Image (cartoon, rainbow, N blue to C red; front, side, top):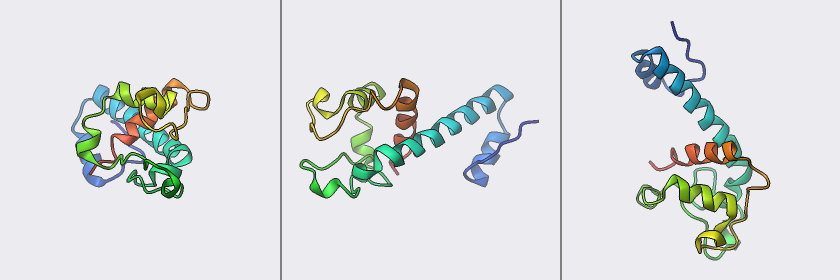
Length: 125
């Protein structure tokens, strides 16, 4: 028997109830990493990118160019996880984007950055 704690919806829990124990463990790990990524995103990214990732954070109105819209599925589908890791780690200038995007490699470790990316991937509708 597998116990799912903190599932986001009944539908999600129902889907997970139909998987093997190994798959269920994978779902739990991904869910946990997504939740950690969401907390980190809200702490370090939402000020510019907004709570929902639409590039409309409190500080966004002072930035030129404006922050990326992580909720734009067409835009986000073109960006690889490696690219996102590089821009988060090394800042916007490292990928020929705005130098206003800071480097986070001295604040967030590799796993934390990967968790943020996992969460960012959930933002497009």
